[in-house]
Image (cartoon, rainbow, N blue to C red):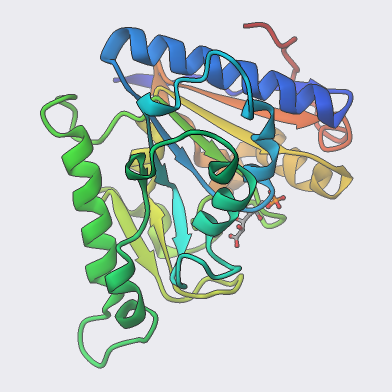
Length: 266
Ligand SMILES: O=C(O)[C@H](O)[C@@H](O)[C@H](O)[C@H](O)COP(=O)(O)O
């Protein structure tokens, strides 16, 4: 692993162009991954992201049966609850494409009720986070020799405070350097109880792509891209070379950013 590579910022003049280019980028990542390893490992978070993936629906070239999908973060609610990232993805994507259900790795539903309540001794969230981490180990063990899993692609959003996945500014989890999947009980944005990938997992990915659109993201993008020294969680996403981080944004979101833009090309 080498020094982190600089972010690649691609800005699009309208939402349709962003969605279409993102779909092409994902398909290209998928093709390369399948050629090399026969499968495509992807992680997804919540927010508006699942909806922005609708450029993939009906596209020839998507080999859904080769996808292995994990959630970069998840809220501790039933899988069909309106706050669940899985439910969001199900609604906007999985229900519309022929992906085998067993290729979508959710939190273990049997552990959710206990994890939703805080325990007196060890927090029961630990068990669900551990179980999810074991799922990652099963998927990646003996395939990649690295200390952390190497996802082919991790898709993330960014919150107004610069958080990404469920890694929030100032939280002790920002310095977690051992676990793959951690839990938090005090998310400043509800619901408070969640699991999240840690930075080592995110920063070992072959590619990470942020997706952000709209003028409400302008200040955040400026802070994240132009002021990395402030250390906002999204600024800390800097995959080790040859891994790369891309920003797929629209011009409204990029309107206050001085960081150089790169024309999108496959
Ligand atoms: O933590 C949460 O509760 C949100 O899901 C959050 O992580 C979301 O992904 C970002 O705030 C980006 O949101 P948008 O993509 O909707 O802008």
